[in-house]
Image (cartoon, rainbow, N blue to C red; front, top):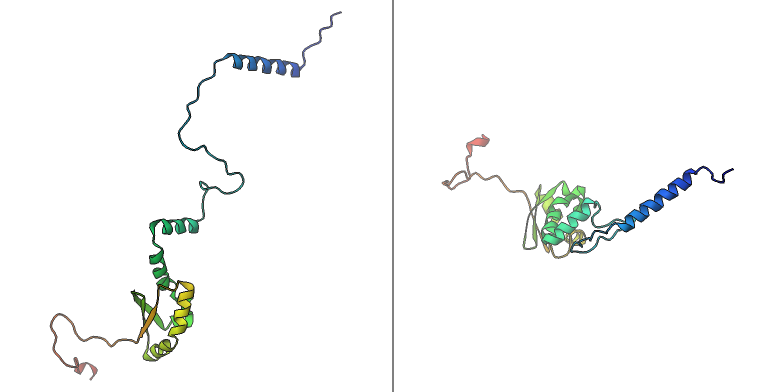
Length: 166
């Protein structure tokens, strides 16, 4: 009787793997050209710079890169007026212009203009806390203005058309 056993599947696989390794070692290895620049570093489980970023972080970096921080702080005075001064005050006045640190606020009535002049230190404190101390340094409050009767380049002095009101 012969001592040869039939080949097992694991023996066949092992022989095929050894033959493939021998063929690979006999073949000349191609030379790899190294690409200039830093090698990619894998970030692992944490977020990396090339991963998707939250929109707020991208906008903040753009504002910093373009040096728009002063403009965004000025814009936040107008955009967040209601949140800064509160909804009760904001419904009776609105910011008009901001030039050289002076914020012009137009009130809806002379009574509200007087009230806002009394609240000016409080409003300035809120603006310093929310926006920054150097954006708004003075607050000028004006009441509503009367309609202008002057139309066009030429006008006649006087009180305006009196027959309109009967």
